[in-house]
Length: 192
Ligand SMILES: Nc1ncnc2c1ncn2[C@@H]1O[C@H](COP(=O)(O)OP(=O)(O)OP(=O)(O)O)[C@@H](O)[C@H]1O
Ligand SMILES: [Mg+2]
Image (tube, rainbow, N blue to C red; front, top):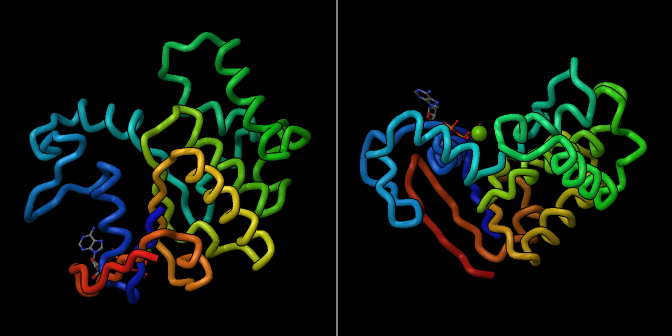
C-alpha cells in the first residue's frame, strides 16, 4: 500500500494516469509485469486498463443516470461472464460493503461515503492487480474518510496492491510506503 504525496502540480495525478495506462510517458520507460508498456497497441492498452487496474477518484465519478447496481456492473459488461455470475460478484460485494439496501438508488440519493464504496466496488469487480486512488477521501468528512481508508487497508491485507495520491498525512499513515514527488521527480521514498 503506497501513498504518493507532493505539492499541487508536482505530478501526482500524472504519475497515477501513467501507471493506469491512461497517459503515455514522454521520457523514460514503463515496464509492467516485464512488458514495455510503450510497445503496446491502443487495443492492448485498453485491455490492460480493463483487466489490470481499478480506478477510484476524489469525486467518485459515478454515472448519475444509472443505479448503484448498474454503475458497479459497467466494467463487467465487456467480460464473458453470464448475467448470473455478474450478479453473484456484485451482490457479494454489496453485502461486504454494507450497501445492499442502496443498490437500486441513484448516486445522488446516497451519501458521499456510500458513493465512494460504490466506486471502490466498481474498481474491484474485474479483480484487477491493483487499485489506483486519486485523493479517495478528499471529498469526505473525517469519519467517512477513515471508513474508506479502513476498507482500502483491508483490501491490501487480503493481497491487493493499492496506490493512493493524497495531501493528507492521516491517509498516508495507513500506507506502508510514502513516496514524495516534486516537479515530476521522486525526492523521498519512506518505508513505514
Ligand atoms: N494533459 C496535460 N498536458 C500538459 N500538462 C499537463 C497535463 N496535465 C497536467 N499537466 C501539468 O503537469 C503538472 C503536473 O500535474 P498533475 O495534475 O499531475 O499534478 P498533481 O500533483 O496531481 O496536482 P494536484 O495536487 O493539484 O492534483 C502540472 O504542471 C500540470 O499543469
Ligand atoms: Mg492531482
